[in-house]
Image (tube, rainbow, N blue to C red; front, side, top):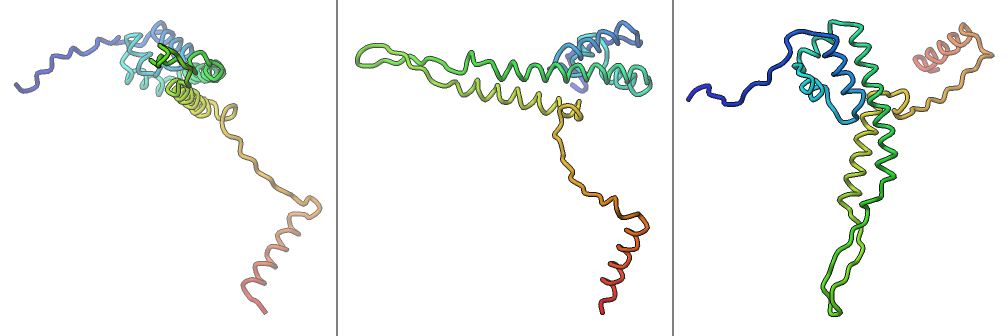
Amino acid sequence: MKGTNNKAKPKYAKKKSEDLIRKILEEISSSSSISIAKACKKSGVDPRSFHRWIETDEELRQRYARAKELQAELMAEEIIQIADDDSEDEIFIEEDTKEGKSARRVMNSEFVQRSRLRVDARKWLAAKLLPKKYGDRLGVDTTIDMAESVPERIAKVLKEVVAYAHPE
């Protein structure tokens, strides 16, 4: 049967409203793990429509940028919580031995790896959303000789260029 799709399409709000925008921005700014698509769907807005609203409305674009900044701050705070949570770093394994049942403590590498992944994902996103605050610092070392004037420096560079082009 051609073109039969039993999946019902979600019903989205047709018009932009302040209430819908506020709901979406609150969802984004209060959760480190929600995407625009999830926030829109949760609020009954087609994500493509929300993107169009952002493109055409400067004030909304600024409000959205602020919501993403707040989301990045939340991610940074969660990094500390995740890194400090050692509640499941170790697990007990029960074993049958000659003496009977015993338990030994072993590292829960799955929990540790998942925690590392969660921290790394948040660090990466925070660095992308707020690069000045959470991005990698690039050092640039420069020495400027202020004793030499600009015309003197230009003359010196020109002499070097001429000497290189016409060696004696």
